[in-house]
Image 1 (spheres, rainbow, N blue to C red):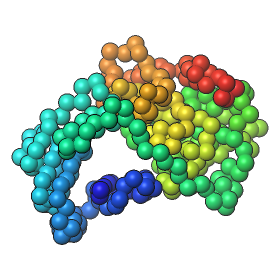
Image 2 (image 1 turned 30 degrees about the horizontal axis):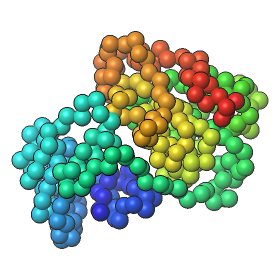
Image 3 (image 1 turned 120 degrees about the horizontal axis):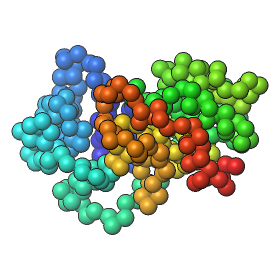
Image 4 (image 1 turned 30 degrees about the vertical axis):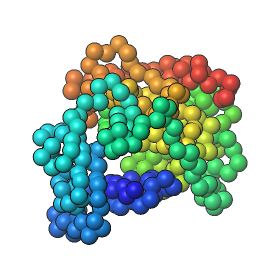
Amino acid sequence: MTLIANSNFIDLPRQLNFIDRTLSYNKSWPLNKSFRFASKLKKMKIPLSLNIHGNWRTALLQRLIATDFRAGYNRSGQRFFYHYHKDWDPGREHMVEYFLGWLPELGIESPEEIKLPEFKPAELSPEKNSELGLAGQPYLILNPGGSWPTKRWPVDKFASLADEFIKETDLDLVLTGGPGDIERNNQILKQISAGQEKRLHNTAGRTSIADLMAVIAGAEFMVSGDTGPVHIAGLVRTPALTIFGPSDETLYRPYRPKNNYPIIVNQGLHCRPCGQHECPLDHHKCLKDISSEQVFSKIKEGFDERLF
């Protein structure tokens, strides 16, 4: 199996031993470079291609690759690009299970019970452990970032939650994220009670995806918004709590068959899940009204013996 993935995230599938080959596609490439990429894939004479992303860019790329048989979702009239299509209708099914609905279409029997592949990332080198300050001490992770502004739980609430962990546990706190999360994480660290600097580690912008996977795999627990790293936690079996704002927790929560990870949402809002990158009502109550006390109580409720 060959997987074509966004170049921003290509290092993730390249860690997975159940994918034969990964190819990187950059959405920012100019048209001529995209055509060269498609031409290279066309020469590979791939017999069948499946497009589960479903935007116009991926549909056009798939058409240019000219595989013998093309399948995908009919979104915005894209059925004309495919030899076979399914209508886009995830309903109330988790997206993992919805995508696996392609198996019978491909002549593969659907398993009665979905079993995710076992995966153990490579461990951090002693040098990298030392650089990040993680050598030997048990820790939990706070992952405050998010690809959309509406997915980011406020800085002051993350800081209050961190203070509770400092008081109630002996664990170090690791803040994760990419280069764009460095300043946000620094703001959180500035608001945490003084005198705890040795227990706090801001790793934002200092880890590759392979490093991040190892950091998450080594954690006792993780608290995150609905963003990529919390799904890595599901992959490497690190317990995690996800704080959901505008996105649909039924479709997008971290996936573990028969053991879905705990979530917290503002249940009292009629306007969520809206799926918007900016709050259409300009109040962002879906996250602003979730207190650090609520999150901490939810964690103690489900993980008391493990953490406290």
